[in-house]
Length: 183
Image 1 (cartoon, rainbow, N blue to C red):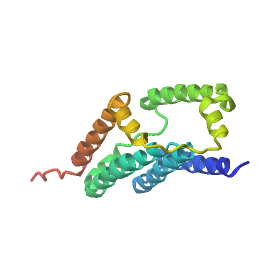
Image 2: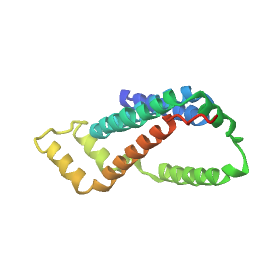
Image 3: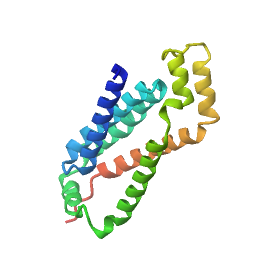
Image 4: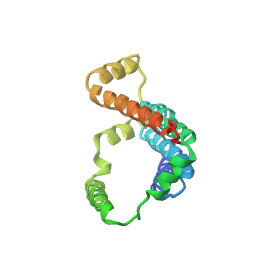
């Protein structure tokens, strides 16, 4: 096993493990900070996949934007709002969660199907990386290609990310506002 493979497995274990703790955790503060670990682990996986721009974008948008907004919303919310959220928690396995479990099971089936049917050793970009010994050529058009790609082919995902940031900002502002005390 090479060093890159060992780093991949370690990073994948940290990412999946912290994501499972985020999803199953009952302590909101611990879940938020482990979500931070999950997002950084995902960025590390992008770096190992030679997608440096996506990794930096992951850190800037999700860690720098979304997660900070979640932290501020949590810190600015009062104890009453947190107590109300704690009281509204339902059991993990209930009839209300059945659609979520069905969707998660379908997603798991699709993902396992993709993993087991993918012929990883014959992917063209992996063959190119092996042939060039993982050396990515640097030329003057890289940033130009990213800019053109963002404004043409990837314009819709770029706009979706901006809408997601706006929704997170509105949600953080809504969660952090104080309700007027009625006398």
